[in-house]
Image 1 (cartoon, helix red, strand yellow):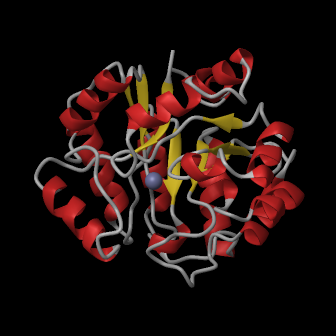
Image 2 (cartoon, rainbow, N blue to C red; image 1 turned 90 degrees about the horizontal axis):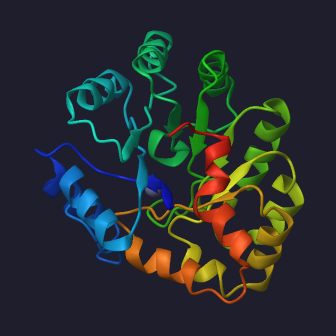
Length: 266
Ligand SMILES: [Zn+2]
């Protein structure tokens, strides 16, 4: 069994434009491995042997939370797909949106402090997390460096350390191993704090990095598989884990599907 906990798709009518805009923002230093649609993701999953994917939308402006929920409700459902919701911390309607998402059965929310333009440990954002926790939702965060917003510290390891303390015991996932190329800092400030980490986008570089491997070794029950599809190739990521000779068979199982099942019901 293989679960990809970190994927993105877009509504059919904007997928092509969304993909080309992201690539243009990255000045072409990024490639898309699907066409950004649900059909494209399902084809990629078939090709890679991925059984289930979690889709992580981001409400980049206040007000978009409603639209995201409408879109999810209108999307064809597939037993192989789980949608998380997203709200913007500056949206005055966030309480109703979170309730609507929870009532529809969404099990988590994605936050991207850089794209959403808020410090992850701000007072306003913490009020939103409190609301999500009333419904026992998973809080899935972009963490650390983002190549399209290099100077932004809103998702820094230090800020997450505050959050991990204040929200200890809640279900938190920090994407990209908690902070790209800050592995020692992540280990010091966030290791063994009950935070989960995914390997999305950064698996290729983590596997060759001693400090990243140490972070993984000390937190192997908290690492989950994610790719960041379409921005990474699911097939290649599955192969990197399957063919790894540094991971034991037990570690591969935990990473590929067992750990994430502690957070999300499939
Ligand atoms: Zn992502």
